[in-house]
Amino acid sequence: MSELERFREFRALVAALENPIVVDTRLATNSIGFVAELPADREECLAALDEAIAGFSEDDERRLSRRRAMMRTI
Image 1 (tube, rainbow, N blue to C red):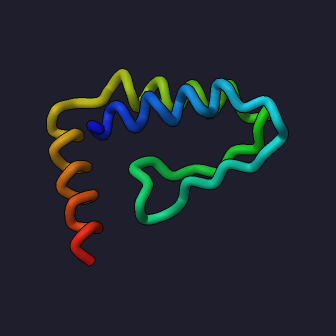
Image 2 (image 1 turned 135 degrees about the vertical axis):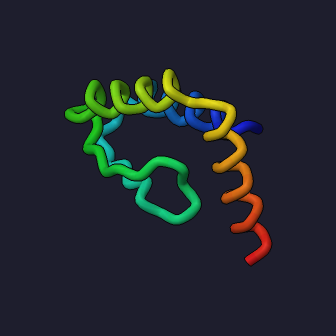
């Protein structure tokens, strides 16, 4: 799975969640870090993810893939 696919999959999850939940992605293994209380913060969260996805470059893919690979070796 590519890093861009991970972003898209996470966006789909955030869009689909219906139960009240706090999403905290501020972990070393995540490529994007934020805290959101759903459903209240859903639109803001989706907008941030859409912006990240729209601006995602091949360089971002290489950098994040390399970062993820290094984490697997620790």
